[in-house]
Image (tube, rainbow, N blue to C red; front, top):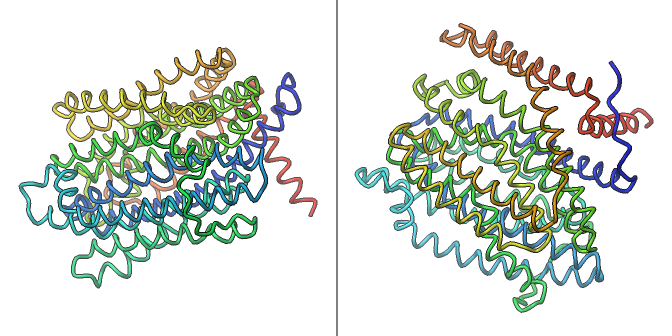
Length: 538
């Protein structure tokens, strides 16, 4: 079999930029993979301890609010608005100017999120009443949701500051510490679930405390990286700083733009509270979807934004179009096979990882149905991340906001129609359809804005990916239909079958790409060879 090669038509500079993006995405992907593995262990612990009980429903409903605000104020709009502005300061001005801008942004953000946190703690009863709409007939569950909301709101403050630190480090092309920081978040939740929860009067409160402690650890881990690069921000209350004002102008519309998926999930959580176990099924279903999306989709979007921002700052739109096309091809290269495999293996995965303790076979069936409905939109979730990054690199946050507003309205409409027929899983399907609506609008507008993207190249890449998915389809279909999944035990045999299916699927997929000598595989393979070559030379 011939070795896949990188297409030589691109200029050396563009190849270097593509390889830089892939290398950064690889670093983030490895770190995110570590975090997701721990996240899987965390979810297995929670499923075993709490199953789909009323306490679990109360926790996942209460966690939805600080998680939504994290997306709005922190990892979503803050990172998307801050990175282009900070990159501009760092590229075109002095290091001192960049530090002052970062310090002013830190102090302003700390002031705002502290106020929001206090308001959230005081207003927890009203927030719980709104988000737990289906709990109104159950006073005990409503009270528990209120307490959990109050306990977890300080998480917003820590995760917002962690996102700002991540934005600075990513702008400086330092991806390791921000990417590995969520590992500590999961470690604290697992530790508190196993050791603190059993001694609490209400065990689920121990998990809520772990959320807050994990957020604080996620922020603290990034401080040494900032200090070593001379960017450890100080207290400099200057909300009128030009850079801070520019971030604010970009951030306000992007509060909706980048966080549309989380907003739609929140809508699903509110409506899902009307179904027994609904919030829990939707949470675990989305967690499985977020595994490939977080490892590859978010990683690639995070890695590509600084490159796109630097190209936009130089006015190099041709380079930006090329980088965007490359990003879309890479997201299809990773996400489409993950989507096929996850949809086909949804029941074996949920059964093997979650059906223990208080998590029943019925819970497995409902969660797997949610995975199926979320999974059909996985390509849209990943693609939107890349396309929105292009808009933000151009300092256009208004267009994604308008598109997101349309998508939210579509999600509500789809949800009301589908929930009556499909139950909680209908809400998952509505979220996936809304992501497709959002992606379609953004593609049309961006195509006009840039005067076209390399759609022919992207289309050819998508065709290769679909053909390479045939081995995945064959292997996963056979394994998912095996009788072993109906047996109550045989966990070793099930584990071997599942991981063998994944290994054979990946091998077959990459083998087809190698036969096609696809550029996407060539870039990844070249990066791996150089990495191992350096290690061997040491």
